[in-house]
Image 1 (cartoon, rainbow, N blue to C red):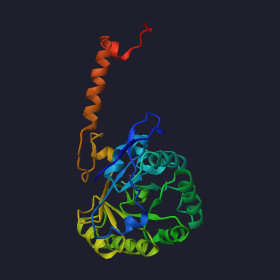
Image 2: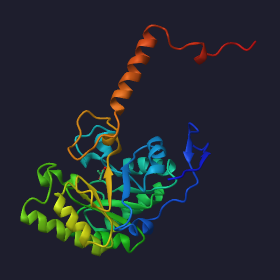
Image 3: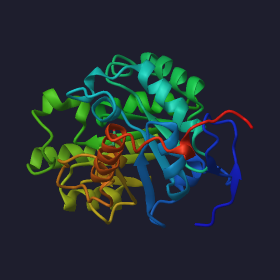
Image 4: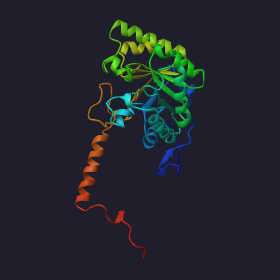
Length: 286
Ligand code: KIV
């Protein structure tokens, strides 16, 4: 993808960011069904957004930030305030990708009206193009309610981490007939309700393929199948920030090792007074 660089001095460290590509739109994402696979990664901060944006179609401000950024045991502790603050940062750091923001647990399940209040706050405070929410058939009326009122919704089915207590863990979904049939019904229901795309997480591969073949909107897989209409991963997982990653993650980098090596060198240079050198200090003007 060709990228034109201009200096954007509005960011605090004046980092050159890719510009001015026209930002993709929700209809353009929907139109990618069955075409070039969609590239989606999570981003939670302005600098990561700047780095990922030129290569992605969609940046997801996932509620996985609860674990990745805040060290919570699950996504259940994430608040609307957190999603709005990180969402706005990612929108400020991106020019090209569609930014989608997760609705946190408790902000949308009670009723479509409650979901609208939460989603409209996310949209107006962040400038993002869409929200994502977890749930299939049960959430279809909410997806229809939001979509019909100008809030594009990405649905999330299969392994839905906000339901970890009900599901009993983070294992793959769709291995029993009952689960398989429910996930197919979920995919149909959210697509019919107007979801512009569906994240299918942790579903067995044949099921991911069937869903992708069946629904008219793009299905974006995570731990699903290369035959989905796109893929999403948590950026810090694929960059190798953590020692342990789920089976479905491929590591494309070794960020943890790079950070450790750099900080080890820094610590040793501070202790030996090798840092700072004259290059990094200020002297009186002559
Ligand atoms: O919260 C998140 O990061 C997600 C993706 C893993 C799909 O929902």
